[in-house]
Length: 267
Image 1 (cartoon, rainbow, N blue to C red):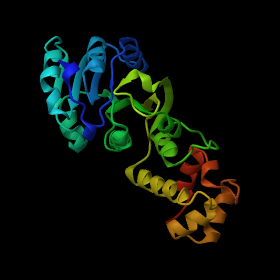
Image 2 (cartoon, one colour; image 1 turned 180 degrees about the vertical axis):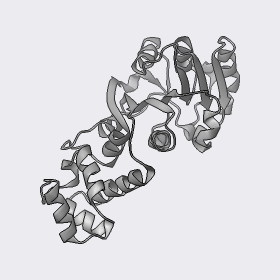
Image 3 (cartoon, one colour; image 1 turned 135 degrees about the vertical axis):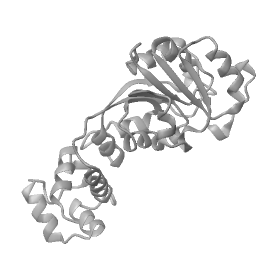
């Protein structure tokens, strides 16, 4: 049936079919019979099937209504698979989480333009999503997993590392997809950390990080002074206290540096 599927450019559809690769992605996600899994972007159901074979329960969302019959046929072969035809990005987290009694793991192979909004939705709005394993453009994976001092290090690197331990689990050639996209991909897994901070700290941390990277060619002092409306003298005093070079730029600071800045800066 899927051979006749007309790929919808609006949904950015690129499907995987190699069963060895799909099984490896499920292994990367560390899915076991103890796990409830949320899949977003079932597509042709190839990854969905592998998840259902390994997980306790799978709830899989797909936005493309033309795939309903095919996916329902797949679900009829499993007692632990539920297919929901809907746009998961537009749903409230609470609505999605009604399908689970406890914590769950998220697995997704999505159009790349919605990957970042999806990741941050589940990092920022819920504590119940314990890990996210997702296929992303290779360059995006490198940005998400970059360390201080790396050329790709930026706001996404710091913010994702704030919430998670992140790693690239494998690179995936563009030739593994149909239709074949123009870029190579990578699988990343984000394992949620237990944060011992309140929402006010999270909001303040986000402002500090975004302000620090506002203009990459400017020093940290200039960016923080301009974007947080703090006096230069106050910023210098905090940097000296934290033993951060006064000429440092945002890409040189570690996660711990940003946490300490958030604690010390008053704005």
